[in-house]
Image (cartoon, rainbow, N blue to C red; front, side, top):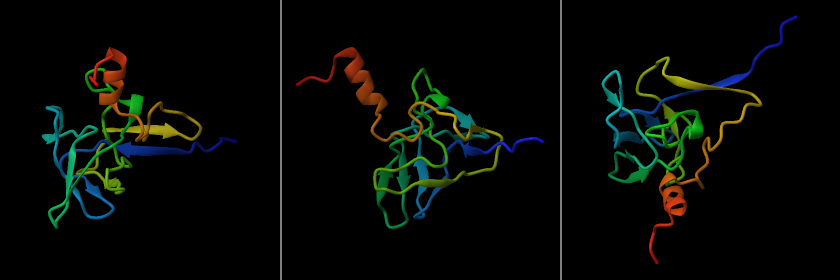
Length: 127
């Protein structure tokens, strides 16, 4: 008898991805694309109809790297205002799949800031 494999799939976040509260990813800082839609990274912006904005604060962790840094975002990524990305701009095979019990370092870890990690690693940041 085969045992069922439980897994969760997270789609990559691009321009147009939506949040639980109706926000949309509107600006990205990478030049990477999927079907001509810019890929979002930690720090990119989500805008809301009433004119407010929030920043994406976590992502796929070390499951996906951009220029050697774990900053790519996926459905499930959290925002600075407590909202969460729940829809991708398109259905795709462009995703990460995590099996139950599998650990992805830094997956959805808002306390981890790649920018802060760079400062700590290099001893920069000033007084």
